[in-house]
Image (tube, rainbow, N blue to C red; front, side, top):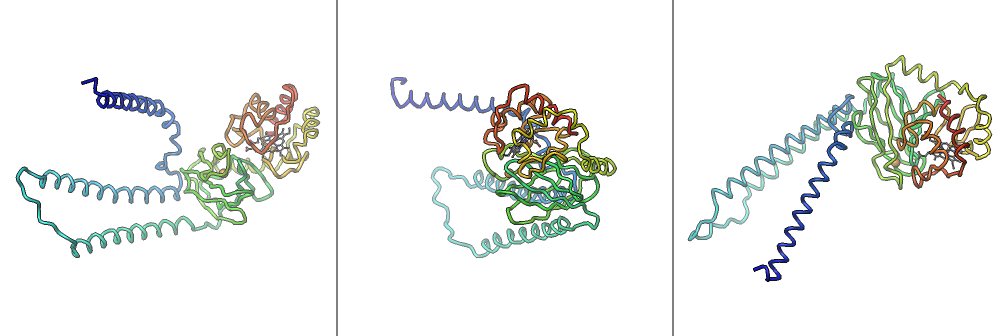
Length: 342
Ligand code: HEC
Ligand SMILES: [Cu+2]
């Protein structure tokens, strides 16, 4: 039988399919720890009223869908077994159209949609209500990082500090292409569109750190356009804001680094308060106090800072910052300066 080309071909196919299935399940297992560590992207762990609204709607629709899924599958299974063809049986009576049935299966979905729409309107109204004491922050999406502008000329990047328990009113804008601001535990997604101001509000229920990301493809490094929201207790937030207004004090001990900073025209793109006023790139006045570099691509350590400054194109290919081919020594000096800017 194995001489038959069709049969041996089939056996080969089946063996291949089995191997592929085993490989695929292995990959899935390997992915599991990764899936677990991405827990904060699980949409069902809301930490704000707004995210709770979304989760409520999510479960409502899931529940309705589950009821229908199981009743349709159950009915199908029943029919398959109960009315299966038996030997010698004639064809069953055929039916063409039934006005009564068609009315039912139009009326039920319409009612369901109206009910879901009603709930959605209720939640939406909560979502867009702006509290009188809301803190207004302008969020500007850039390829591939986030700029935040607070009242009182405070500018920060990538890590958004907010006061816990107080509503924030974000003005979402873009410097280049469409991006999408998304922090799953705190709110739904909202776009940043060039030339448009999209208002977005949420209130972090409790202090904590919440992961987010750009969720609309915006160019090669879209995947490294992460963001973090840090909800501080109100007093800690005020202290943070006050500290941001202070120009860095340790500049004088980094004269060589400042010369390199000027010589490589870093200040044409970057701001360091009291040194340069570039607007095209993240404000570096307090870069030393951020936890990551390059919108999440590297943890902020002195070694990583030197790596970034020396060759950002190697760390985040395509990034809109040129590599300056600095020597190791030069990169370390600039990194020491930057790490000191708390
Ligand atoms: C042509 C404009 C430009 C110049 C010149 C430039 N950069 Fe940048 N830089 C950028 C951009 C854009 C980013 C944001 C990259 C990203 O995250 O996608 C950046 C990011 C950075 C970051 C990380 C900031 C953060 O918040 O994570 C550091 C540090 C940095 N640059 C230092 C320097 C230094 C030091 C120089 C000079 C040697 C320099 N840059 C020159 C455009 C520039
Ligand atoms: Cu983006």
